[in-house]
Length: 247
Image (cartoon, rainbow, N blue to C red; front, side, top):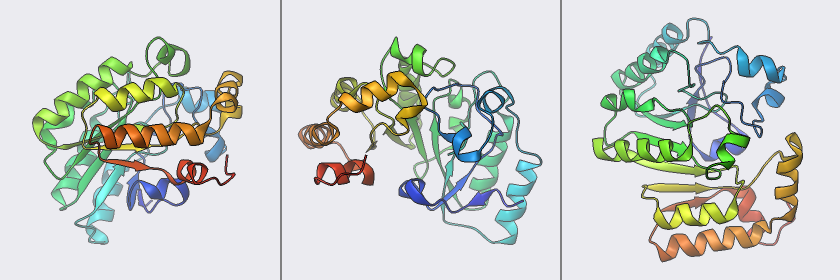
C-alpha cells in the first residue's frame, strides 16, 4: 500500500499530494460524497471508522523509499484526520513522519480535537477548517462534527502557534453566513466553492436550486477584496461567475 498519492479532478486544486488515514468518518454530514465516490455503503462509512491497516508504517516506508521531501501533503480528502470520538494517535504519528522526512502538512478538519497536534506544526504547515453554515444549521447537516464556534476557536489557536491558517467554504449551505465569515474571520487563505452533490439531500437540492451561484461568487470576491483577504475561488464556481453553464 502506498498511502500518499497525487489527487486528481477537483481535489487537485488543493494540493500536490494527499493521504487518507481512516476508513470512514463519523461526522455524518448529509452532503458527504465520499461513500458515493468509493462505492461504499453510507451507513458503514459513517460507523466503521478505523485507521487504515498499517497506515503509519506504510507512510514511513513510502516517504523513505520514494525520498519524498519538500512537499505539502494534505490530510485528508476521503476522511477527516480528526474524527470526533475516536483515537487520533495515528494522525499524530503520520504528521511526525511527514515532518521528520522534510515535508509539511495541510490539515482540513471539522473535528474538535485537532489542537492536540498543534505543537507539531510550524510556519510552513497549514491548519484549515471547513465552514458551510452557522449554528443551529450545523446540527442538521453536520450532526457529529464540531460546531462552527469550536472550529473557529481552534483556528485561532493554530494562528497563535505560528502555522498558516485557511478556511474551506465548501460546500456552501448558507450563502449569507459565508459572507459574514469572510468579513469577520481571520485566516491566511480562503478557498471558496459552492454546493456540490445536492441530490444527496432534498433540503440541499432546494438550497442549491434557489441560489444564484454566480452572484454568490461575485459577492465573495468583492468582500475578499474589500477586507483584504487572500482568497482562491474554485474552478467550478469561477466558471459560473464567467457565465458558463457548469452546475
